[in-house]
Length: 237
Image 1: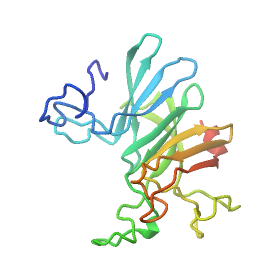
Image 2 (image 1 turned 45 degrees about the vertical axis):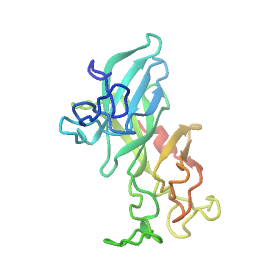
Image 3 (image 1 turned 90 degrees about the horizontal axis):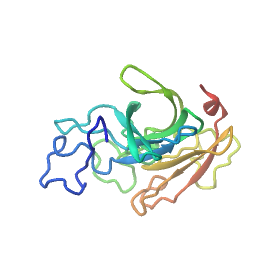
Image 4 (image 1 turned 135 degrees about the horizontal axis):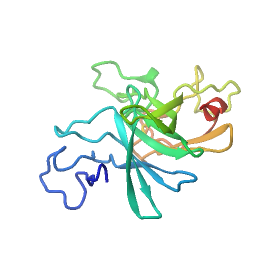
């Protein structure tokens, strides 16, 4: 429920066929709940959609995602909603988890996968040895749910770039590091982030077997779990 109205998608039971995007439904296909975070102290569930809602013309309503709060104790929506503003190039989120009473981690991403250094040349039709849509935006964002701007956007405190991870001690598993430059996590769907302790987070991808190949061209990706030391991010206010 958003602003007192139910949200539906093209596959929601009861949606008429043929249906007009933006008029008969507002949620994009595979664009429903992607992050559902339990808020400490209040016990509320914060439900964040994966993709922007559609406007009346059937186009994304903006560069932001809707976040609604649900009260499990009452079994009903609270009526409050917020927005998560995507950074330039991001199209969706992959996960959403609180780390304390008001701060939460969000994975934002684009639809690309693979190393930008192995991108296909513009106009190329042979994609057997290159990535046609390489990864460009894969971030873990820290937000403050207690502070919003005039448009209702949650305050973004800071973020880390998963395509620019320092690995000075070569802790990445053999074969996963590029050998030159930073360690990267260039997967289409990165869907798990959780705080481990005061300085570390764990991040993992969903390989969508056999459709994701972000690590090696033409080879199905593994599910990878990485432990990151990010004390500055976790302590940021």
